[in-house]
Image (tube, rainbow, N blue to C red; front, side, top):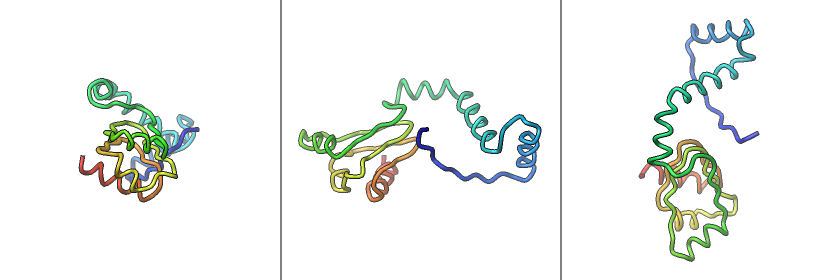
Length: 130
């Protein structure tokens, strides 16, 4: 199973009661099932807008992974990354903060960033600047 990101939401008592009623009546196996389906339906309802972003603005939909060797190769060529993606940016555990700073120019991630804590923190800060 793919990596999942845990989110927390606050739901009013009436909405929660209605969800529980639907679960009790067998429409959904549990609250999480209901919420995942509701999220998927909302994403589907905006598929036109999402497809426009895919085609016009963002380069990657899915997972982009970078390891130390790849980043060192880019650095030796004098190249810097401008990463735009929807999904997950995964930085291997052997990438140092210094190497990340030398190779990432811009980052915009709609989704999650995985990697060493100092690198993740810096990439989130860099994302705020972009």
